[in-house]
Length: 154
Image (tube, rainbow, N blue to C red; front, side, top):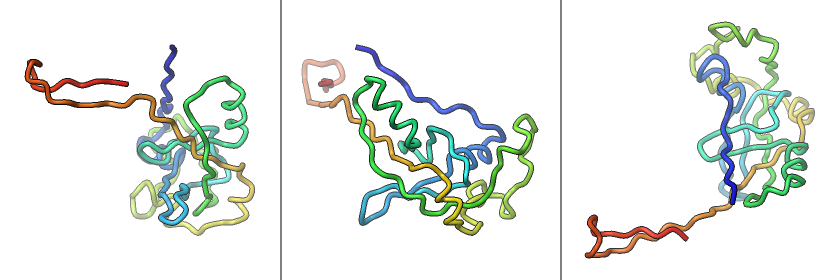
């Protein structure tokens, strides 16, 4: 059996580049869908807008479904707050980003700017990639074990 790891590339400019590349997402309390907050219109085929959150474009979703890989599904992702900031024109080899948010906080690249529905509409359809839990861990007391417990993976 093969296992694959999804790992993010290192964005330029540290936390600022991470905010520009990935944005952030919160889960809607009613629908359970991810609500994205990010720059647009560019979005990479796969992004990581928070711990354990993975978003893919519709084109990439189609490629994943055709790949033969298993263990994941998709839910729609909502383009909740999209701002017009095409940072890809900046020098990615520079030590610092071309501009900083006024507050100095990386997330204010999108939180402190106005939502543009037109820019959101120009972006591709987006999906949350939901990775299935593939292992169950059981912990039981076991007096014969040196640690007093035994852990089973199923």
